[in-house]
Image (cartoon, rainbow, N blue to C red; front, side, top):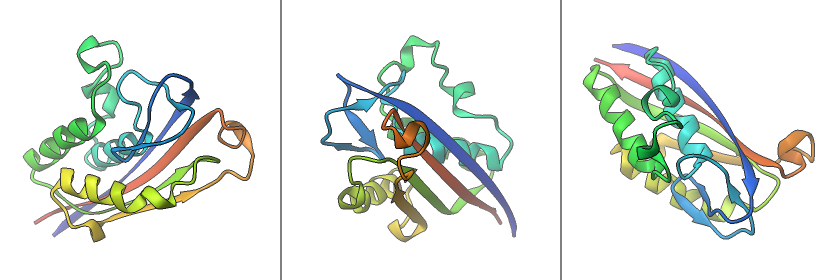
Length: 159
């Protein structure tokens, strides 16, 4: 058995007039995340972790923000495409662990739904997806509520 580990990071600016979508879940909040797609910071970090494990670049290579066809794209749909790419290279996901960093809103009530949606998209059991939420203790751009960040690690397995 071969294994590979990849890590991913993403951050998006908070702004008015956009929905707040994290982990495929629309979360009630007065601000949303700014981006070319739906700006789902967690799903983007997970995709980069998966791609990084196989040295396949990053999501900007596959879904460039300069391409109008990705404008407003559902990041879970993009995640499904990345998963198919990983599988086409003979690999499968062992597990994913992640953390979302946001001062507000509280994400704990939404984590189970996020896990379920990501697991369903990746055709995994929910216990293969770890999602945690924390604040930045009011430090930096996330602490000042200028944005939301996410970190992810993916373990890929090839038999």
